[in-house]
Length: 202
Image 1 (cartoon, rainbow, N blue to C red):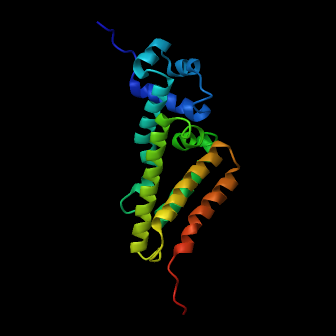
Image 2 (image 1 turned 30 degrees about the vertical axis):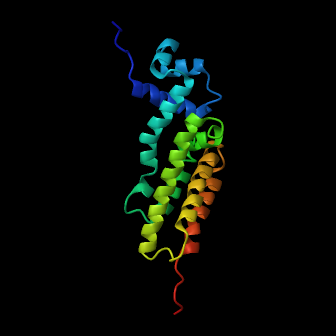
Image 3 (image 1 turned 180 degrees about the horizontal axis):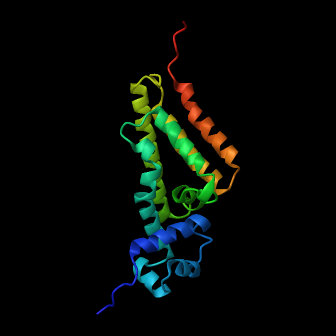
């Protein structure tokens, strides 16, 4: 009879997420994972199969927990243009404090692994689809409220905003000056001014 596990899978994944965020996949060795997780190599492989299996499980948990919180402003059914602006202000705020140098694990993975790793790419693709869907809905709400002019290609704007989220995260990961990150986020959100309906002259 197998002995009871002396660890919780979720706790291991949370530790792995933080290590992968700090170092990326390629720079993280199996030995570092074993030390960070606090289990022996045999237990780690028994639970996740491989370093790749652990990474994919970490991406799945990150998608379910962290992204739900981070994307809340644009995934609210009532999200609008102001929600998009607030979202980018919030993302830029991560350039200071504990998140500086870390960025978003999913955005980091999009840059580091997606082109090389089909297992990671499926999570990145889902992340990008989720971003675009959230922005598209928020823009549609904004158009209905008269904040976005008719005829605006919402898919194109949503795609640009989605790519911009990845770019801002890359700046945070690279420890770009906080003022520059905030300026970039403002410039991105101010793109919404370009699709406002024209006001009638007084």
